[in-house]
Length: 424
Image (cartoon, rainbow, N blue to C red; front, side, top):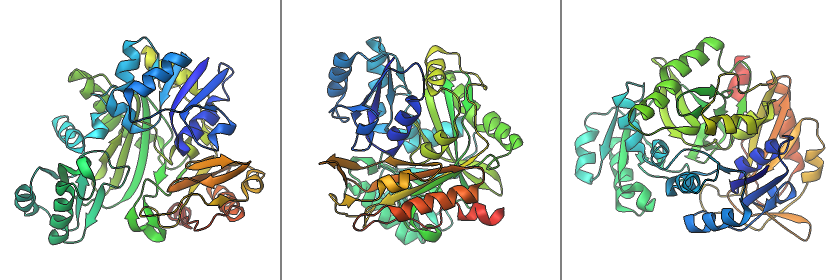
């Protein structure tokens, strides 16, 4: 099989690493890819903001299967267009992807189908914000309605701050078109959980759960990011909770989408808060999470291609995945200044030494390669990932690997999975 993977980050590197393990795969293309991905797939130029560019590439390559990594091509309708042309493609349609591309659509959908989520208000103007704030206690979560690369969420400590942030979003100065509508939400307390399933439009097959670390600094300090690290263990949710999440969240979402005439195929990422009132939906992603995919796929022992084809063909089952009981953890190494301004083009050292450690795989998120050396090319640079029988050992290995890698301004959190280790 010839496989085309759309995207250029750590998630795509992890997908390619796993796909290469399938005996059915003969060739993998990644568009546009990055420096590290180029060692494991043929990287080809494409503009992921242009549907025409991606269609032209697929017409040239004629892949047997296309896998969409990031959210923007889904919003552009890549799956719709590829499927119309007879190209097998893993992922949801443009209409189904509204669960991620529009926060207001997702909140109203959750309310219609009585799926647990936070109290909210949708606002299109400063006046609507002022009127809605009277119905909230502080802190208040302010979210941009559209796609904002994980940076469209602000937790405001006061109503004045919430109003200021909402107005900045609505004006377009903060996030452009993504903030033309805002969603105000009650602040939920608890542990976050990433619960992913693969769906064929009717049935779902769960992946193992993971926990992301969104804030840039230790102790969940600083601004939100696209994710600074994640871990997964066999005990992160027990069988009873897994069944509850399937029964009350994942299956009702897929059934609700089908009932509304919008079949959902592909990966559904349910971002949850495990509150005292029970699990509640924070957000949806309509693709594999990043960095959760890196440790999740480190634990996957079955053929990913088989599960993707089952999703496309309408034969997904609960037994599509087989998992190791090991723990896995990913630590994101980022450029200094991220998620704000940062400099790129910094030479990366120590990658070979890190890769020699037992159970360690370094996934490249934003790197370029020239003259046999790797350089930084974005905010989140590397996803240093380790697998071991116990979480504590996996964490130690990941940080041992991080210590061997260096680039100017490198920053990473030192407390990935720390809360879980304290509970053990």
